[in-house]
Amino acid sequence: MKICLYGAGSKFIDEKYIIAGYKLGEKIVTHGHSLVFGGGNDGMMGAVARGVYDNNGYILAIAPEWMSDFEELYENCDKRIHTKTMNERKDLFLKMSDAIIIAPGGIGTLDEFFEALTLNKLGKISMPIIIFNIDGYYDSMINMLNFMIEEKTMSADDNKLYSVVSNIDDIFNILG
Image 1 (cartoon, helix red, strand yellow):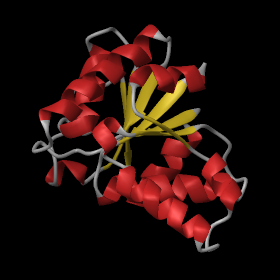
Image 2 (tube, rainbow, N blue to C red; image 1 turned 90 degrees about the horizontal axis):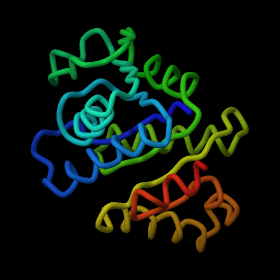
Image 3 (cartoon, rainbow, N blue to C red; image 1 turned 135 degrees about the horizontal axis):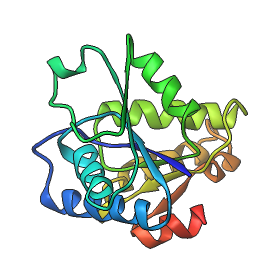
Image 4 (cartoon, rainbow, N blue to C red; image 1 turned 180 degrees about the vertical axis):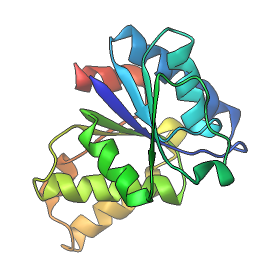
């Protein structure tokens, strides 16, 4: 299975996320899966990629040609695809993946998550979307989604489009 990771590329995130990301990368490989990600060297992206690489897993990076102007790219990828735009990048993430894991991240991660969630709802994609809620990172967002359901601006069935887990083993229980 090709697992797409959405997560922070920041080099300033807390060490607990780096540790969890590395362990996630290890588990991706031990479960026989490969990584599709944005190609960043730092943050969650870099941590997961290092966990995959150190355990001899396959890594596909997808990033706009100009991304290296903003962040350091991870060098140990088996394949790298350069795109012209972020939209092209996001399209390729979805076309080249079988599942998505949302790790702690910033506005780019939220953009990617909500686009995938919307496309899943509209039937344009069909894959597991798993929020890896490390140490309650996404609790506020999950509360907001639940509030939207209460206010009837979002269907109660929409919360079946994603899963929320707080530990790595639960990710792979969902993915099989």
